[in-house]
Length: 369
Image (cartoon, rainbow, N blue to C red; front, side, top):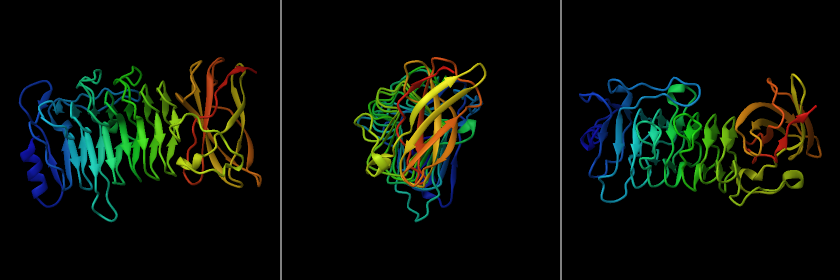
């Protein structure tokens, strides 16, 4: 792909496709010496069309083989790798690194009801092997600014992105976007650290976004930071070993619960559950706790298991719906499908009907029943 291909796609009406068939074996590196034009018409850029490239098939980590690398080391001044100012575009199967700004930058979906863009199956910030910071991009790996209905990743194995090694953070999103099923802050195995910077794994500065089913680990800042906005669901992720909180609603450390949950702030500073006990017998585990929040609302409480000494949410072990009484109180008991070993740590989150997810609760060590 070169600037001519981008300009040709922008100049034609309707959706366009950019495929690859570069002769020879191995990774093909494209290093522009001037900024690529902003994408202003719907386009599909498909790195998996390069012969020999294959998408991920693993349930954990990624075994995607990417053979098209877009890198920014020849640019004299900082630029984004790909800038998208259109709706209904798909970027997949690319390695994008060494740009001074974001690897992918999305803004200005022009339609009143935009069909969002899809970012799928890429390595953003790493080398083509998915194991090295090459280096990463100078800003966030992916920035979605003033644009909605976009999806980073997805629910299929092939849609999983690896977003690691970027200088500022992994993913920045504004209102109404989804980040699903990605590896953010690790190497391609989904375990070994390859951190994004102090902006953390995912930073949300808009309303009504969803961060779900991702591995978000080993970033220098928070796993997920919600800044000044509400109704953001953070669900069923594996969040661990980050430099800041696993989920941070104020970027000032843990936020204390308040009686009746009347305070306001990011995600309405949703109160977190309090775990009163976590006990395992020979075959099962029971977690007991309580929640104080808005009266007569039904909340989704999610449960996580962590190694000893950890306090984020590494392994999602299930969820339970609970309804507060007229005073805003509810107690609960939960037994996951599989017994949790003694000495592991349980944490929880609460998500309100408005879509506000709390920070992780204080941790509770599993003891013998």
